[in-house]
Amino acid sequence: MTLGTDFILDALAREGLRHLFLVPGGLIDPFMPALARQDKLIPVVAAHEGGAVYMADGYARASGRFGAALGIGGPGACNMATAVAAAKTDGSPLMVMTGEVPLAMEGRGAFQDASQATLNDTAVMTTLTRMSTTVAGVQNLPHYFRHALTAMWTQPRGPVHLSLTRDALVGECATDYVSVAPYFADLRPLSMGQAEAALPLLANAKRPRLAMLAGAGVEHDAAAQSLREIAERWSIPVATTLRAKGVFPEDHALSLGVFGYAGTRHATAAILGGGLDCLLVLGSGFNERDTMHWTVREGCKALTIHVNTDMDELTANADLGHVVPGSCHAFLDLMLARAADIEPSLQAGQAQRREWLARITAGPRLYDVENCSRPTLPIHPAAAITALRQALPRDGIVLVDSGAHRAFAGHYWTAYQPRSYISATNLGPMGWAIPAAVGVQCAQPDRRVAVITGDGCMQMHGIDLQTAARYRLPIVYVVINNGALGNVWLRARQYGELPSELTSIPDHDWAAFARAFGAQGFTVRDPKDLASTLAAALAAGCTALVDVKADKDCVTPVYDFSAGAHAWSYHE
Image (cartoon, rainbow, N blue to C red; front, side):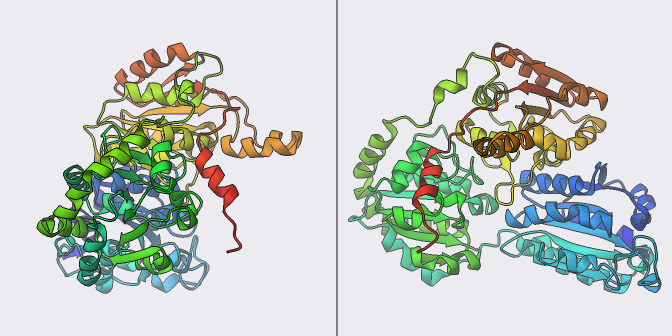
């Protein structure tokens, strides 16, 4: 017989996890001795429950599996809410667990009671997760645990929540855990009728100018290698969304770069320039930022083929072209399996595709590239990001936070492989990357990890820098310290002195902040010192923070997106 806590920890380990992110508290006290009784899971204590979930999110994104977070119900669960919502909007699979009072004490005024009789944590989490339920006793713990993992891994993936009563934690569980993961291994559903019908639409000699737009679904399906094989076999250029940056090497001859927010000139020209005949969209929705403020709807006249496992995305945008419900990997595999049928037409169009692509790539790829080496003070964000890209190994992983620095990083950073550019791009909570990097480094201990964040983000979740330092994780945090809430200030300053003041931030010494937690801290004021300082931070062998005194008065390279926003009307 094992206790409920032991059952849970064993189940997480059997599903492949090696780390559990948590904030201890009274309602989860039974986990403390249980963690000491096992040696398969490494507990990582966060400073904030939201940070623990962000860490689990980073772990999931970097590992390709899932992440797990644990905290108390009530205040702990409420602190987790934004982090859980961010994971849901980005399709990140998480197991979120919160402790609850004993059943006999529900509704009687027990301290931090947030059971269904009071605040009802389960209801709070319902709209933020794929599943949220209360496990009332140890008897139904095995069933609900497996059911939660099933809901988490079923497409579209996302977070799940279990509210665990004390009865469930301390009761004796008579059932051994049986892993759910094998049921989902290589599960690649595909609507064969729609997929088969798409092939002749793709392979049509009258539509030779074909391109692919790869979204997060390519990453989720581990389909990057198949994507590259098809692109190279038939000379098909590839653009990605910002969320999927890196699923196709951005230094590849067929790469168009990012399309949408902070995208490249090449991707915009290919998809909206008027020459495109057919666009194959793989695993991307049609949200505002991934469609250049929805201008794909009006600006792209090409036939669109949309492959996605998210039925809501497909049915909401079915008017854009031919839809194929299913896995990107399965669809790409079908293209390779039917190569004999589609190759003649695709080969016939290769010369025209190459000529079309050559015309596009003959022009500049990026905007304002002179800012990448701007020598003046304060430091331009593009110069800091360029220096970090040069310092970080090719297989290094960068996490990008929310703010103006997201636009600079999305535009100027070159990503070479999947899961090497990680960002919460849909809900986009500020400060996400600071704790998420802890999870990423835990998932990928042999890779170098860096964070691009801002001073506004540091004010929100900078406290979890101490978690990285506490566990001596060699993460390098680069703070674009411009004394402002970057993007917000760029808008607010237009409205006068008070709006500008409200969106400005005092110049804090973030290097000293880092040293207070046992990390190393560096300050850079001159762009000529960026390379040597970043090299020193990477060589430190521990958590390091580089405080870059940056210029806030820098226009972000989102010109195409802004033009789309001005051109698009909400009144269709």
